[in-house]
Length: 110
Image (cartoon, rainbow, N blue to C red):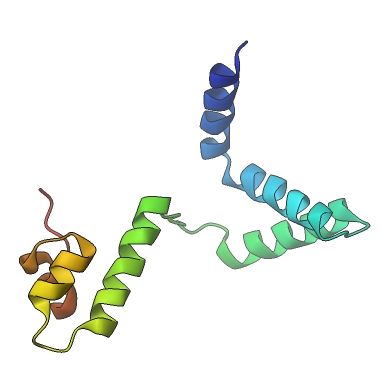
């Protein structure tokens, strides 16, 4: 089995079990920070996560989604009422998109 197959199989399995992904990431972070009882810490954090969010729908944004939100927030902060054209050039989006962001309108699906 080559790396690409292994990665896609692991990714597909992890997408089906977000708790397994959380458990793996917590264990890795604990090891990086020198935690002695990694399993205990990991399981306690998973338990608390499930207790707080269990049974509900949890949406995890993609990296691209996070970048879009960050860009929109920056545009809102920098907007002064007169710089739509400048912001559209800086962020590589249309002036209409800048206006939609500052007006709080949802993205167009096109």
